[in-house]
Length: 244
Image 1 (tube, rainbow, N blue to C red):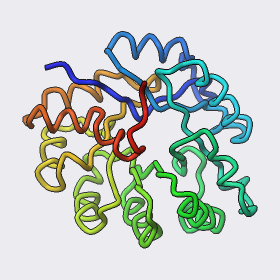
Image 2: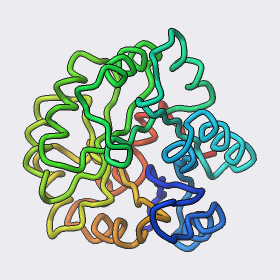
Image 3: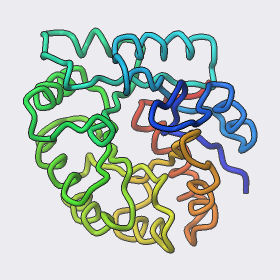
């Protein structure tokens, strides 16, 4: 069965830490090669250089591409919590994404806490990396009481039991799948918390698309469950978006 694929985790731009081709052209080639209907994406300039310029570049590059859905970011190290800033930044975007792993800021951090308050006010979903043991737990504690979806990314076998416990207790938490490549990880999560809580992402073109896609495609779950993971869930979270 062929599924409509919405990739929730892609990038374009440049990677300053090693030589990689993560150009928009490379992203498009990956999407075409694997039948991806559309992708949520952002410019890496917003991660590694300046989030204002990065967000502007993301909007510009996605404006004429119906297969790309722009994702906003901020760097809390440069965010002073000006009233209305998150609302202003969020115009044209349906989701915010933060990178404590790549920017090396702590979760117990006043700018991040202020950002969460503002994000809850403007009702935008959040995708955030939780790549180390304990990070997902702290994010869940800080997000408790917020009325927005929170999507944890960079979850792997080393944090699987942690996120299962958190997802049982927090209905607003979902998990992006690109590092869930250990045997039976998809099946375990579907069994423990349900397919409606998994969001497909590939990490393209940072990482190989097939490494993320094949564990979902070959998982011992129903075709309807695969349909939810590969596109249905992120559409629901974004209110019917993305994709034409």
